[in-house]
Length: 130
Image (cartoon, rainbow, N blue to C red; front, side, top):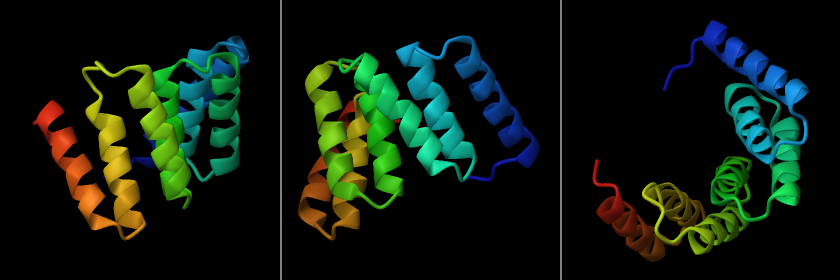
């Protein structure tokens, strides 16, 4: 996916403004942290905000999903599996539950474990065929 640098800059600016306005809101923290990580090279900053979100609300399945993706793309597939799995446990009927399932599948690919990667890919595809 190509990212327009102006749009990425706007996304980062909006995330930082949201954080300035609501620095202790767990939803703002994980969404802004994920956005900052996704649209910039500020991995540490993104992780910091997502982790703070999880401290404030450890029951947010979507924050655990965001954390799982950040961990996966920062080279920690085992933690990504743990975080995505926890998200599934917290919200087993989530209509977008294919997101953490895809994360688990991708993490297993990174670990070179292709059988569980295929199994999780099939689960994700069954839940979100589009």
